[in-house]
Amino acid sequence: MKYRLLLTLCCVTIFNLASAQETDKAQVEKTVSYYLDGGTNNDFETLKKAFHENATMKFISGEGYKEVNALAFFKKGMKAGPKQNRKTSIASIDITGNAAQAKLKIEYETFNFIDYMNLLKIDGEWKVVSKIFYRQNK
Image (cartoon, rainbow, N blue to C red):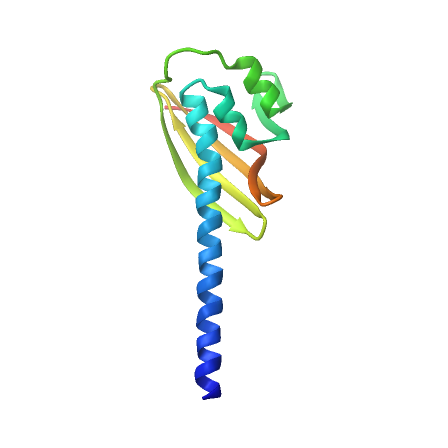
């Protein structure tokens, strides 16, 4: 009898942990989708839902290493207009506790962006806190 109770308790615990992880994965997917959809549709209001207000973006340009506030960068550079001709995908998501990383691919005709988004679960909500990227010519 004790064995069955212990076995049942173990199964319920494993199921609950797996369900919580899957819920977090869906929430991370939703967060990075705000970024991808907002960028594709030139919609800053949607894009900003993905980011913490102090999120950073770090990258290498022709001028070397750059570090900027992600939201300020996108607000300045994003102009309303027709939908962008690009294909987006989530290559991977890795979650441990309240930290996650998502690898994204944004495909244009002549190049790709590979984005690495670092997210934290802040007050129950996943937010991008930093982004690094690489521009890959085709």
